[in-house]
Image 1: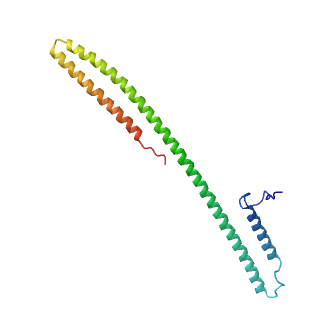
Image 2 (image 1 turned 45 degrees about the vertical axis):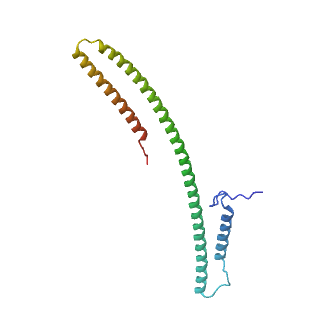
Image 3 (image 1 turned 60 degrees about the horizontal axis):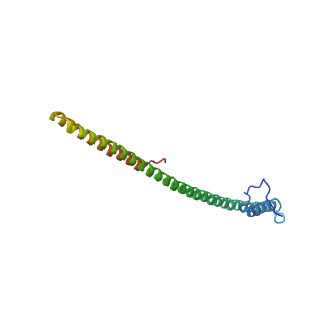
Length: 178
């Protein structure tokens, strides 16, 4: 049959409950000794006060020892909780970093594919315009249109480069929530 501590015990169940009950018994015995005369009544009140003072010191030291022990147990339990929390955080952060990298790699690949499609459409359109450029009879119009097409190519390529640089900046951005 298991001997469970009563619900009113100041000691937590399961964690060194036996030592807690022993401590309670020690305190109870000491208080009982304090209540009765340990020796035959001393006619000398000074000695009587001295014996009671020693008993009081014994109780105080016992309480100090138990307080230090409970404090040490509490610190140990808190340290264990901190360690378990840190482990959970590290594991969760690693999982989130992996998901983040997978997301950015997938979205970068998708972005590159879209840029490739846009570039091919732009180049096809540019080829059509260059073919039309050869049909212009006026050299001024041909020169002006060729300049406009060169500007369009330069602007298009610069815009693509800027978009890729902006996306890389987003990926490399470090955001801390501390």
